[in-house]
Amino acid sequence: MPSFVRFLLLLLSLFLWIGAGLYSVYVNKLKLEQYKLLRQLRALRKENNLLYWKMEPFLGVGAGAWSFDGKRRWSNVKNLTLYLQKVLKDRIPPREELIELTPDEWRKEAIILGLRTTEGIPYGWIKGRLPSEVLKEFFIQRGDKIAFNARGFLLSNAILSMLV
Image (tube, rainbow, N blue to C red; front, side):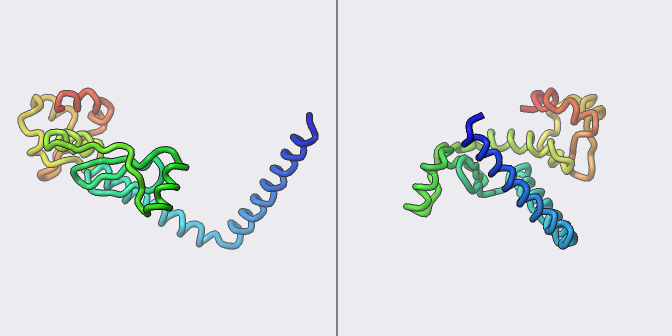
């Protein structure tokens, strides 16, 4: 093995050893803070994901990230170098793709995404569009909302194809 490869492996091992030591100190001394931080990050991630599933506006930050304003979706440039150059120069993330949703496309996406949550969607959105046997077998109705039951989630792709 060439000496520079051995040197790089040694250097990498050293960085990993130092990193593991620092992490160990952090975990041993600050357990409560780590727990609180992880709990907060999980809650933030959950809230961010729910914006997507509920068709609510969200802003994607970074190269290749997608955003949604309630009617349009767009993606930032995927190339990190181009993204950074544009942001540093113009202070605006460069768009690569823009999708304008028609009202029919918005409705279909809202049904598909909403039914993939346990909260479901307003029953009126699909009323009369599925056979009553399918509704009884694969859905749960809670008030004015309808959602998949456990069996419905398993067959959701087939059921959703009947709706859209």
